[in-house]
Length: 222
Image (cartoon, rainbow, N blue to C red; front, side):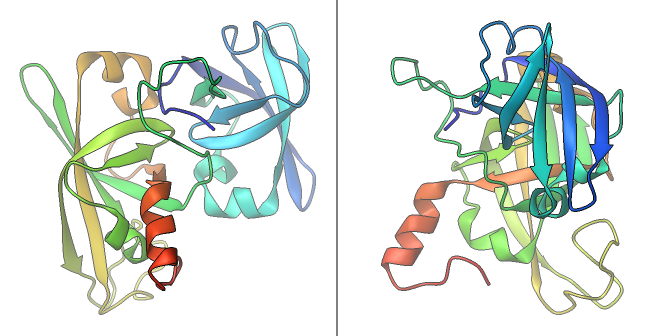
């Protein structure tokens, strides 16, 4: 379990293709300061288990399902990622409860700078719309953020909520979008400070909403 408060920006050192999985090595001096094999570290919002560590870097195995459902499959050596160690029971909960289980990926569609912050709009997959509410919480690349506004657009033929990767697949469905406001500290300390429109981000909605839906007889996933 995590809180969505990024501890440091790490650098991908190596990615080894294992066929149905990958082995990811990330440099992060702060999160490896007290790391042990078996510990959990969130890498841009994805909970990974440390399999080995050496100096200021750690290695984790990433299964195929995770590579498909998150942005980790597109990483390359030199890429910058958000890092957070799992929360301890005695820690302050500075963000919100984040599992590190990515629900899907979104696409940054715009960035609007202001004097003291920046508003970022993100397009989300149709299946996540019902969990995205104004003033609610969401984890974007592992960053705990408050949704300042949200809405829906109808996806027409040839359009797609994920930058054209599945053009026309979701025609006629409601594609959700939401906006978050980023303070200077977030811009400086996380990958959202440099990501541009068209780039992919990992999304994890508030787990409480999914449990409530399940208990009320709904379906967690479409």
